[in-house]
Image 1 (cartoon, rainbow, N blue to C red):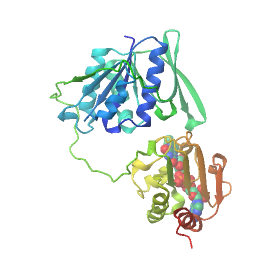
Image 2: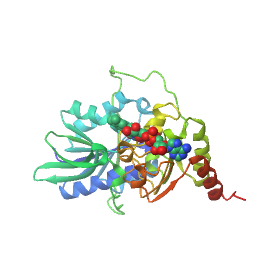
Image 3: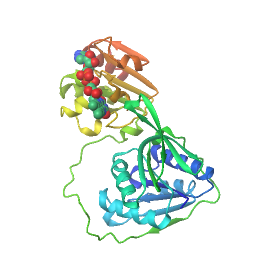
Image 4: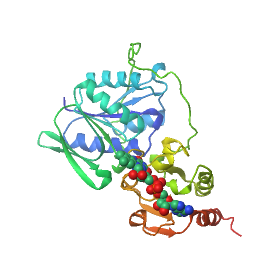
Length: 323
Ligand SMILES: Cc1cc2nc3c(=O)[nH]c(=O)nc-3n(C[C@H](O)[C@H](O)[C@H](O)COP(=O)(O)OP(=O)(O)OC[C@H]3O[C@@H](n4cnc5c(N)ncnc54)[C@H](O)[C@@H]3O)c2cc1C
């Protein structure tokens, strides 16, 4: 039991998170002089497979009807079967909703350990040490894992991608598994939510709204601003909990961890739990009526003003429609 396994979802493609997992997996495998295996699960796409094969030592693809869409139990069955076959010391996943659901279950079923939102991984003597942020990003905890396999979901965009080899490209091995088992739970209905082309975690620009907007309608105005600058929409937990926008928009400690080049926070106070989700944002800009709002301590650009005055002006200026 010594190798590293990168668990990748075909539906994510070769996105920033996938590249981050492979980058860190490659680095760790090289440090430990072991192999990096990659499991690609779900309906396969050729460009992604080729890119992964240029980084990992071995690529396993599992693509069958039972896993054509994400469903926790069949996905877990695949992960457990592949892990039992490969016996990795470390299994890496990204910081997405699926991984957060799968990681602790996988660790439990394999008798290993699980830790999430990891920003650094190091081998120390014979053990694995990981760093993760705690107390809403105010402190960092260094945790030594004692039980293996260690199932770790990474704040994947915090890791540098690996270089792609041009020689010794790995073969893609196709596995077919018996997934006819009697699962503990199954999805009986799916309700699709309209979402942007880019995952929030991968968005380069995000316009996020908070409770100070006062209701769902002003989010429409924010949407027009977002459309004008090619941004994705986000929100604080208060706005999501109020039912103004879908829960998948939530940014923060218990929501999405985002890493855009520009994050525009509109009528968001900047509670520590919200800031925990934007610690990897390069530039934060805020619009808030309260000059003492904590968001102003985190932002590079701040406007102390009612958003109703600022947002239309910004939209017109940035979309070039201002007369
Ligand atoms: C365990 C735990 C986990 C949590 N996880 C998260 C998380 O993941 N994400 C998250 O966001 N929160 C999270 N929270 C909640 C967090 O503590 C805050 O309650 C929440 O972030 C507040 O959201 P808000 O900033 O939208 O609202 P508020 O704190 O109410 O702030 C509203 C802001 O709008 C401003 N405002 C009002 N009117 C206007 C106007 N007309 N123009 C401009 N500005 C205006 C106000 O000055 C104020 O600063 C969590 C809390 C707990 C306990």
